[in-house]
Amino acid sequence: MAEQLGERYEDLLGSIWLYINWRYVTRHLPTEKKELFADAVDAWSARLAAGDGETETRGPAERWWRDGQ
View 1 (cartoon, rainbow, N blue to C red):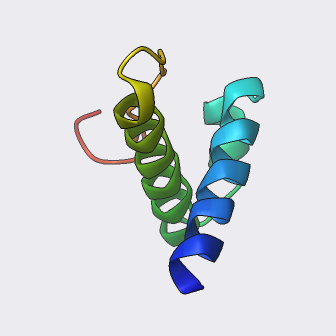
View 2 (view 1 turned 180 degrees about the vertical axis):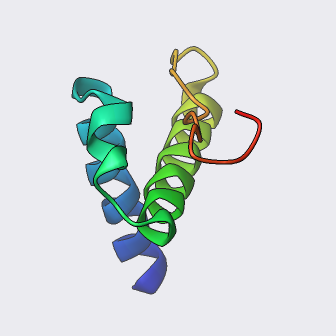
């Protein structure tokens, strides 16, 4: 059950990520939340790509808030 909820969370954030201005939205989040959002997007993107081998994704999520990026 926990894994299923995790995938639903990743699906939700991944879908949102497709349509938002990533830097604008994440700029307003604390770093911990930025990392959680980016981790969920990366997991969602990897799961989609592994599912059929043909799905194009925009991942990985840019982690612009880290030093040197």
